[in-house]
Length: 192
Image (tube, rainbow, N blue to C red; front, side, top):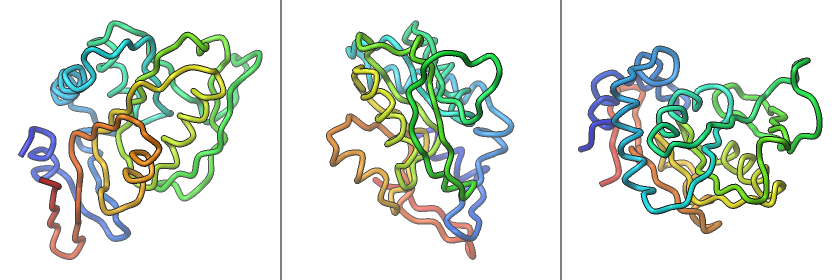
């Protein structure tokens, strides 16, 4: 069992509807020393790849992406979910369905921050159905850039997202893959 699986067992909470709450350490209150371990692990798993940008989606992936970016010495770019007055110019856009929020977001990245010369490592906190990752890979494709890998903190292996992403040929690395969860008993089974 790895460090993230241990932490999920210790502090994660299973809720009805295939919800795994990790907000006490990963995506609301953030344990920076845990993120440091995650950054080091992603650096090991993607070492040797030529990476020029880390891409994530607003908001829960940003903290993890920032730590990973420090290990690779590259900037973080995140797809925004809302337009603001300080976003100008052309954008790459994709529609992303949110499992957690039960809605579809129109996400975008400014064209001035992503170009055809970029080699992109996508980082996110969860992978369930794969919609966020498909949206991010679409944005990278629109830019003519290359996805060199995808790093996920927690993959819900009992949902189709991981299979979809792997079948598309992406190098996907998940630090913890949950094969089953039971809200009634609070048990979590990880992939071996």
